[in-house]
Image (cartoon, rainbow, N blue to C red; front, top):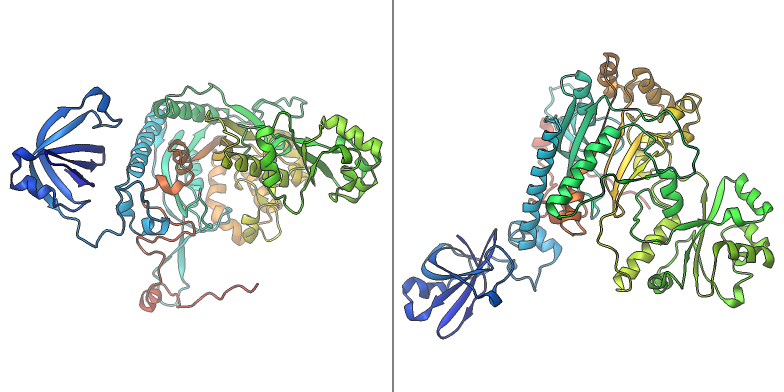
Length: 607
């Protein structure tokens, strides 16, 4: 039973492609044996659902096609039409790969769009990976536990979806909050002692602006483990350590094993036994991103260290550095034209190193006034240290010495150059997966615009408020040196995309209360939603930690698509609306009154 696609008719034979969820089978009708039902087949509208009986014939070797039914044809004996696709009902023909409808039309009729082979294949692969996740974690003695979706609103970071409840007359309206993640329930589960290793494929909700890799509702592979370590008690004195210097190595081991199994089953690829590790400071310094794409070069170089003492002292006093990306004509030829086409941000300057500006390009920079005081000999020294050659492109910018946020101006420029070169067909990026752990993030931040609505000028948690500090920085935290405190937070990055993040949790109730009260400056009302967690920590909770892998992002990468909407059966649009179910939508005043709410229109913000 399947739907009929376009046909090819001849005098002796007619051919009809029949598509179902497994692929396409070619039917053929011998006109010398036609009966009434076979004549009917020629009149059946495209996309109709039919049931056929026939004889399977093996195709010649040179005529076989890839796919489940590519080696056979079916000689039709009988046809039964189960449901006819009515004329005028089809807004587009999903079986035609050469004329794909626009995004909005396909979203409105998603149930038709899912007839496209590429989307149905994505859903099957998603199911296969979900099964693999469960198999691997069950083998590692994890227990799958469902946790509540309706929780209480709490200041954990992202904007929440609120769900009103019917009220008793005279009482103020009350609301649930849809879980941003199962963070508190899973920690409480571990604190209970009843489960040492937890996981679930959890549905999560965040009221964020839509992007190609974000949806208001999404799925994550959620894990938590008891008795995780707090990291080694020695700190190698190296600028860019290559070792895992935080706790949670047990979580790392489970995740690497899980990812290795998925790639082996889906891609047939054997990944390294251990993934590379890079600190946040190194990632921001070398690549200008906290989720660096390491599949290409164009690394950032520090210019400050090559400047004369006077200029260095000025930048040191301002706690800033000057840095650059050199696109070398000799070794980075695929990126030269892309570098010329990319437009620098307002804080970035671009120079083309030539014979006539070799001793003056840096003194012409507006990045900082002190650079304009540099003499020819001092600039020639910088040229020598940066190994500049005529025809090289130099992208110059300054930034705070201590990296902040998720990217720098040069990090953005680096990605622009690479993406432009790829779009022009001048650079083909490797298809080999580059997995990378990023560790030692700042524990607290004031550089996250998405959290400003809650922080209101206060410090906020870079990850979430339950993340433990590195043991080396505990004293600094208690002495108020908030900016210097690093967290036991780890992100897993694949080809420049964050596919998961987790941390070792605070299990000391006094430390957790200190973070809430003294660092984040939460008042008693803001702390109230966390009182049950604080009490659970007081009852002998074990050290614990966990991680959440973004299942939709992971699937998008495995399915080789840029948008997570291609791996979700019924996704929202880029602005969070659902054109199929026409949601969100207003409700009547009568319904609102049951929840103690009034009808109203939010005023537009003034510009």
